Image (cartoon, rainbow, N blue to C red; front, side, top):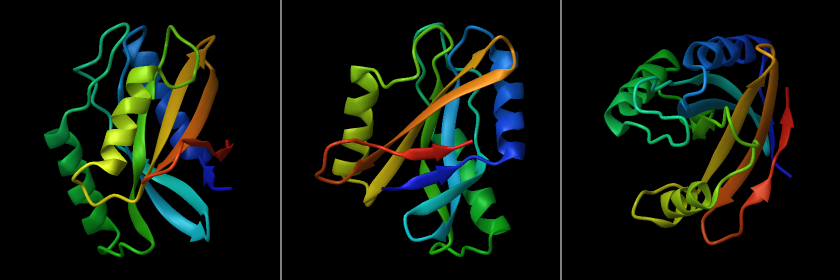
Length: 152
């Protein structure tokens, strides 16, 4: 099983973003560090705070490509250790499980023309302005989505 760790500083930043967005869905990409075989740590994430609505989020590819470029420069382009890990978005008014549209989108990402073998999907929700609910799924090329052990 794959494990993804969400460190305290990243949790705090997510909470801040979610409070600012209120009932609007927001999201972006996850950038991670491989700390052991099948164990990744989220070290940064992008946020597109402008395109979400109360029930829908679509990320801006240009905005997130820029975030990846900055991340790769900061990590010395050490792609074996630091790389794109996946996508994230909030479900402020819905349970933290992927919608049918989320699953289709992630499957097309890993099975499409991009050279991505796998991608995580992190869905988050802020409860009572403080408690972060989160669930992660792993999408692998030509495989069914699988739950991820998420440590927060």
